[in-house]
Image (cartoon, rainbow, N blue to C red; front, side, top):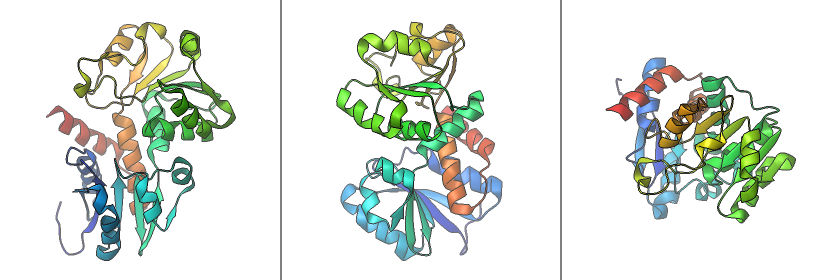
Amino acid sequence: MRINGSTVLVGVIGNPVKHSLSPVILNAAFREAKINWVYTAFETPEEKLADAIGGIRALGIAGLSVTMPHKARVCSLLDEISDSAQSLGAVNCIVNDAGNLKGHNTDGDGFLDAVKHDAGLDVAGKKVLVIGSGGSARSIIYSLGKAEAREIAVINRTKNKALDALELAGSVGRHVEENEIPKVVSEADLVINATPVGMSDTEGTSSFPLEPNLLTKGQLAVDLIYHPISTPWMEALRDREVEVHGGLSMLIFQAAKAFKLWTGKDAPVEAMRKAALDEIEN
């Protein structure tokens, strides 16, 4: 990558953000596409968020990814936001169009692209169970609803949070009570873990977001965790011959959508995947 006076700058804001894989993934995409762009990380404390958004305009930065804890608060600092970002109250991608800043949310649609890529699944007409109701879960629930999933069921420890997330699902949303879990799991075409249970830094807690013996061969599961590449839950499901995929593809495909929004070009997803895997494994 050659940086010169014509290099276009994009990046990610968050706090903390130095651990982000996004610079690795998107710089690999720019190299593969042979375009003179570069992506970096800007660690941005909450009290400096408004200054950072002003900096985009002042410096002509072409766009930003937005991660925690800024996804909600940044909405009010932009000129316009997409329908999905408006519904979710969260932005994860900003496009700077000659000083007009528009916010988007690419997480949920990135997930749909990922599950289609990894498992060949079109969620239309399918029963889906989501474990959790945080930011990623909400984005996925919203996109599942738009993609005409037959049923979107949610399990969450806090019922009110689950019900709030289910408002994004429309008429096909369903809250799952504890005694209903075995039946709902058995009927699901797709089960999604959208909780941090199973991450490297959750050792000492239960490593399963849902008992693996509730799933059987023929069902599909996705664990949104991407580090480690394979979680204890994923390994246990494979032992039961359940098809299961990790969260790296969602990370890549939501970044691919940001790439397209910024550059107008289709993203080289396989080069992005290789770069991410190389970084995680080294």
